[in-house]
Amino acid sequence: MRRIIHIIDVEKVNKNGSVDSGAVRVLETLVKKDGYEHRVIDISVEDLINQLTSSNIEIVNAGVDVENGKRVLIGTTGSLTRFASGQKPYVIISQISADGSNKVMGYRVASANGKVLKIRIEDLLKFATERTTGGDGVPFQNGQFVGTGDGAPYIRAYPGGDFLQEGLTSGRAKDIHTAVNDREKNLNRVNNEKLGFTKQQLAEIEAARNAGVDIGIIANKLFSPRAMRALWQTEAKGFNTRPFADPAYKVEVIELLCVAIQNGIDVTPILNPKFTVSHIRELLVALEDGVDITNIADPNISAREIYERVLRASQGIWCDAEVSKVGTSGGWERKAFRSRKEMQRNYEEWKKSFEVEE
Image 1: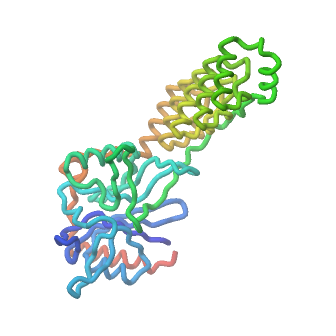
Image 2: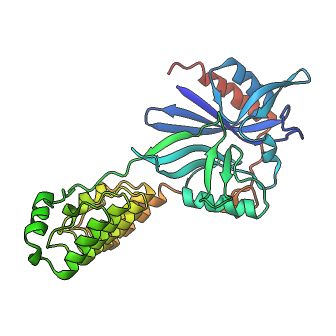
Image 3: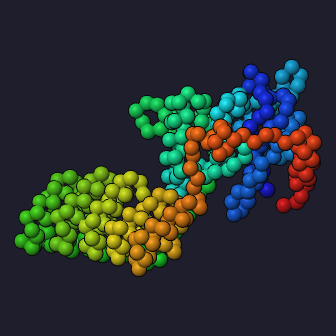
């Protein structure tokens, strides 16, 4: 079994960033087939160094060095002096993405007192911005927050200190609709039956043609001009509307789905023309939060009920990140290190776990 260690707090650190005495608090992550298991261990610096040099355990944000003939711990993904701040930084454990995509949805982080939290990316970026602009120290010990310049803020790992990866499975509606919209018939209609379209429809078809869009997607007399416009303008931006380019969808739903795909949301799990625009709004929130919609995406359930189910499920996945509660006297006040005697007893028990055949 793969064992990974992150240092999440230190009792004392030298000015040069090395740690040669006292206690450290580590989060051990056990990598299992069905996910990760975490446990917090307070351990002396000496015992941790001994364990790191005598077992196959991995440590992500620190390493062992020699200083004046003595083995010490040093930070490898950000200095360990960051733990000396009154405002303790988070340590990022893993990056959470939607299954089958590169879209980052959030991060699993550990606070100095050992709380392990899954936080939405927008909440974590807000926390990092407030922590940085407030002059209260760095937000992360082992991650780089890039929040300046013209681009959107983001978080990145240090070289050699990659975050673990986790996936969230959103599932899909049980009844997925395949778009019914015959492109060849549409092209024949517009070429041979122009009089069958309204002036507004023909204007949208011509605008789509001028924009280089395949007019076979929208040249269906059952589409309103408004639906045509939403579809061709989205196609013109390089997005694929074909999965829902079907007159069976209400125009408001088509418009909402066009906005969603332009914002990077994979809408294929919720494509069913029986869903109202209210249904779609709530299901898009579910997809953004990584909620499993398998038993939620049902057009026979009211939008209000979907909202309540998504809210409950989302609260079971994500926690809030509040600047006032990290390393302060707020809800997450720093937990005192265990006594030396208790740490030694816990360390002896921890060592035995390395001897167990997995």
